[in-house]
Amino acid sequence: MPPTKVDAKKQRRKDAENAFETATATGRSNRTGRVQFDAPVALILARRFEQTVRTAMAQFYRKDRYFTVTLYTGPNHLSLWLLLDGEQVTQPEVVQFSHPLCPALPPDDVRTAVLGGVNQANARYRTDFFPREIKFGIERWQGGDLVRRGAFMIVERLATLGPDRFGLLFD
Image 1 (cartoon, one colour):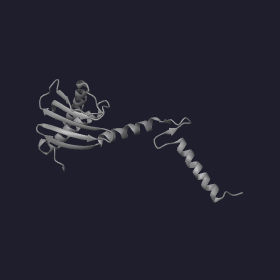
Image 2: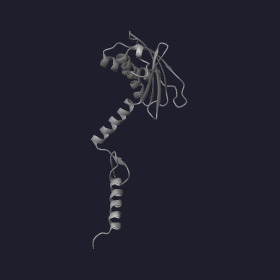
Image 3: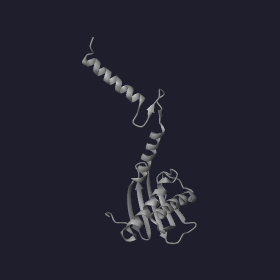
Image 4: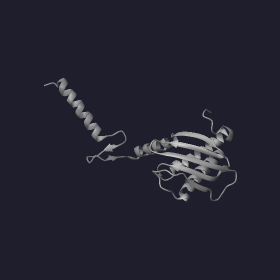
């Protein structure tokens, strides 16, 4: 007996449900409902996260002698102010703006993240910008990746646009 339209529709629905159960957009699901990732998918997810940090909405401005960036990534928010100098300072001063969701952080963790981003940008653009003072406010501390990216972006913008055009809205 040939399948009817109703049977074909039921079969397509069943196939779609089976496909949804066995594969998600980012991995394969096993019978317990957990998603298992193979190596290429895990690499793609890591790159997507990296791109999310890279493509965070950024606002640059200059306040007195400070070069600042404000990053919005969706779940997190960072305001980073750097007082930069041409001479390297061994222990730049770290000041944290109070934020209700982020407790006081160890200054060494923040200093390490900022210096990592600044050194990476200095190496890439062959510049000599070094933080003398670091002021920051962050919504959630997640290991310093966002702070490192913010410091990198400040030096990158200074290297490409110069200090006079740093805070301009349109390049």
